[in-house]
Amino acid sequence: MTNRKKPKVYLTRRLPDVVETRMRELFDAELNIEDAPRSQPELVAAVKTYDVLVPTVTDRIDAALIEQAGPQLKLIASFSNGVDHIDVDAAARRGITVTNTPNVLTEDTADMTMALILSVPRRLAEGAHLLTDRKGEWAGWSPTWMLGHRIWGKRLGIVGMGRIGTAVARRAKAFGLSIHYHNRHRVSPATEEALEATYWDSLDQMLARVDIVSVNCPSTPATYHLLSARRLALMQPSSYIVNTARGGIIDEAALIKCLREGKIAGAGLDVFEHEPAVNPKLVRLAMEGKVVLLPHMGSATLEGRIDMGEKVVINIRTFFDGHRPPDRVLP
Ligand code: DGY
Image (cartoon, rainbow, N blue to C red):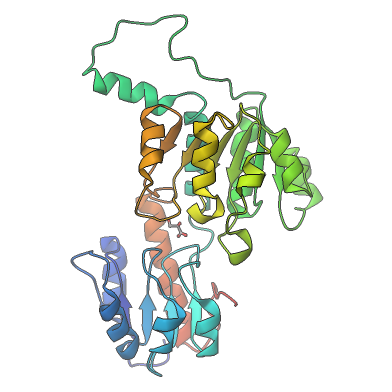
């Protein structure tokens, strides 16, 4: 960094040791040793004091907070791919740059998506629980017991064919699923050809035709409840839905209703509308074997978290060297 004075950097959560060590070496960094989420008064104090805020998806960096920032706050370098927890417009109005950590959690999130695609129809969580609930007692194999549904040959409908959606498609193709997708823009002919993917301009039509839906689009005002009650009702009763993106993209109450009424066969959810609260009705459905629930761990690998930390470091350094940071998020 050309500016010799180290920027004052405020981390809202604990990060892997190696990342915190880098932060301490390079910046005047305030770590969060407790790892309890920072309170709103702590965040207010931080935006009045620090040059850089490093939030995660568990912090709400809304307009009310940003408006209280002092003139020293120049950068919000989020330790996240998604930026729906940050009011990017409000930051822009205050001349504060926002960055995120794209690319480095694509493959990990696609792995977890694929794991849910496999787990729900094949009753993986249910089977695993059966053994532990029965403390290892099991009467043995039976031709008619624990029958799930075949994945090979089924149609996967990907909602959002960005980096993660495309990585899911690559995996799913290898598992014998045919790839269908809905996206704001059609992907390149080369990608479509490589994935043998069918583009659906109409999300409604795609939902009615596929066997498994995978939600992989970002959370924006435009995608809030994209999977609405009306759209969920278009899905086939034998179909499944998997979400590793953001809870609010699916109308969760409507999904619960569809699952209870047998209008959708099952769901695999890594994200929830009111995270970290999980609707008890979903927990009940999980106990009945209709859904698999995970605690937002799509990108939770040590390697991924270290790569995310390195991206945050690069974004901060580049910014304070007077250049445009590589992962700048535009309003
Ligand atoms: C992100 O960074 O957006 C992820 O959801 C966190 O794992």
